[in-house]
Image (cartoon, rainbow over all chains, first blue to last red; front, side):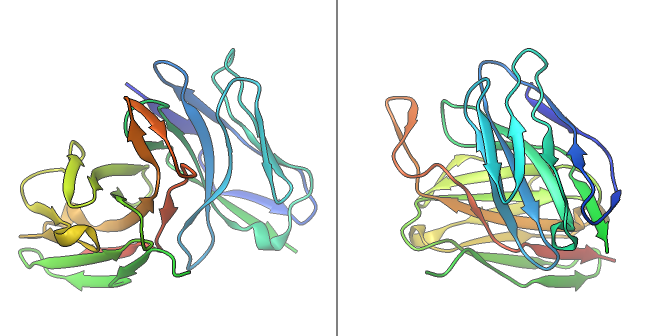
Length: 113
Length: 122
């Protein structure tokens, strides 16, 4: 079946450090891939997405590239800020049929000044 | 425009009691989803409504869970009787994307999530 594996947290960084959160997936066919973020006290928000191989999603300085050959969608940011502290979820969705997101376990990011 | 709202934000009940969670989707969104995150684990799909009809309830854990969406507007998720393992955060999401000829079509495709309802069963 479809599944998503992401690195366990928490990931603790200092402000302006480089961030990578690894995500790999298992899926039949060609799913769309997503990163969602949950800031403290808020709901899940879509951060970025990619719908086909080699697509790069980007938003708020974050990037992730859909790598079919390695079945990965790693999240990166060149310089994190304290305000980026949140829980990040990698997810996939089949491109046919009704929408159903399959999530990873989430990775908590803590950024200190 | 109001987003997806959920109520209550946090509920603490004892084992064996009943709890009802409510979700108000974004106005005009036909698709409504319930997901659950048990502590430290992945967010798991529970079920999906298209308007008032249950399209997919394959993720519902057992018959202690009952979801309804009367009139195709807001939805409720009732847990009766609650067990310890039901503790977690219940997320609701809605979207406007529609299905046509077996393929997703129409709308932005994005699921908009609420803040979640945290359920603690003691």
